[in-house]
Length: 328
Image 1: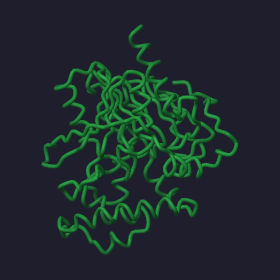
Image 2: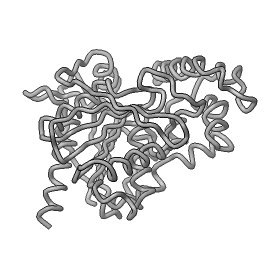
Image 3: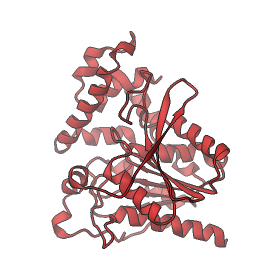
């Protein structure tokens, strides 16, 4: 698909710092008007996933996936739910395992390449509910899961899944991990490590000999943490094996529904390998936009309705591609 050379996101001058774009909405934004109803789905392996529903009585559904150590109550999730509800869509705020406020039952939780739960839920929706169109939208880690799932499924994707949207995606995990070790990302890395370790402390009774807790608690970055915990617990031979197999980038060319990936050029989390220009240029299905500004899961620029640019952009893309499919 042709790349959009000049995406229309232009924040005010005082909001052009990537770190302000990243931090401000995470700490200070409040999104009102959404009341979730939670549904717990039991999974085949004995664990569970919690889905937060916001329904308006539609035949169309959007599923919004959060980022690392987020949940369905994060402002960027609520903002998308509110925008699509206003456009006549039902919505699910997704909570990865262990992210809904209650520890999951197993030592295994979620990770950047864990698409099995999404596949299970998507098949459950297709087989048990009456939706005609479904869109999957993910942020950061959730965006990687979204893109990887769409690529894995390819032509076998449930027919009701009509489009995909992803923001701020570290689609090349190895190089993004290197970028996140830079000094200017230290604040974010420390927060990620603290939250991840806190969750493991709640499940220490499940830890077996494959995990060295001392190494886990000494981890200072994803290289350390993934080697000590993510890889051995989730069946990878090493951190490098995990990054290679969990990255969505190798699967982008296999996506077979209209999908847009929006990564800000100034995103301090993303390496140059996380901007798959060559893949998008050759793909019939993958649209790539690289706004100059936006930070990581930021895109702070409200219109008169209070929607952020990212919310209006996602909604506009979905409506345009679905209208084209209908007219075709």
